[in-house]
Image (cartoon, rainbow, N blue to C red; front, side, top):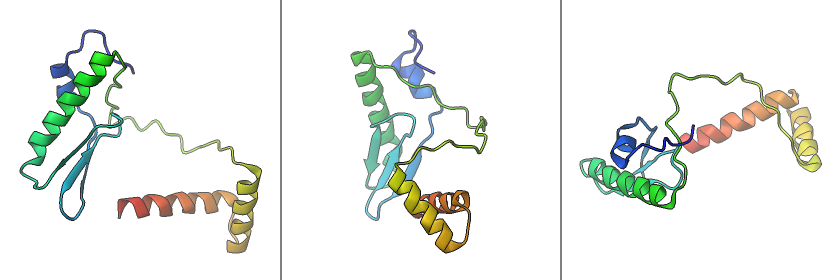
Length: 125
């Protein structure tokens, strides 16, 4: 859903946007999947909330000044995914995946699901 014309920066700061926090070995980083380009980082966990607040405020201010839309946060209880996905691939990629599935003696669907699961697991590690 696009932004409401009457929302202020303070309104947006109160909305429950999803935040992903990661330790990078020497600092904490926070990203907001629904707010592209919004990133905050701090050397300590204690400093992170203030840095996040400043980054969010600056991000919302910048987007509102440009007049760009701001996505509303997604309802975390909205699991409206059907589990079905139509996917178009270049012919060569389709062929390569089909051949790999054949070598593994699994269906193409199972091969693709496994590949996606492996990638998501790699990213969360």
